[in-house]
Length: 114
Image 1 (cartoon, rainbow, N blue to C red):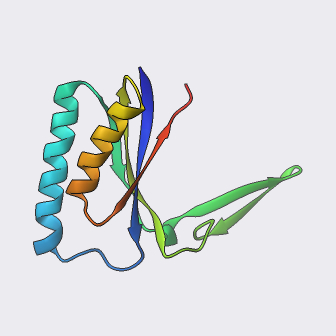
Image 2: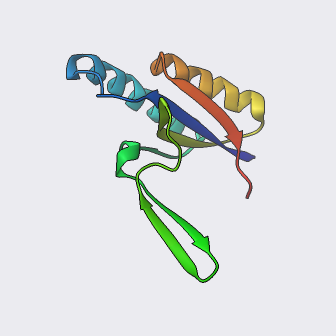
């Protein structure tokens, strides 16, 4: 079994209003439940906006700390799900379902080392 990171990318800006976001979150909760029932769900989390990030970089013995995102962009990592499945095809199947629930957001699938 291999773990896969399903990264959820979203555009900058305010989140959708509650009447739009509420049903999406209900569908997401249902899909997470299906993943748990199937034994593939490992972990999932939403993230705060990039403006809340702190970036650290070592330079010799010093560590430089900077407020804000590492990369400026129009889209950012808004959340993720980690699943454990037999192969890439299985991961893509779950990622496709996640993409459908979160339309029009993009889902990136990457295997995790470990």
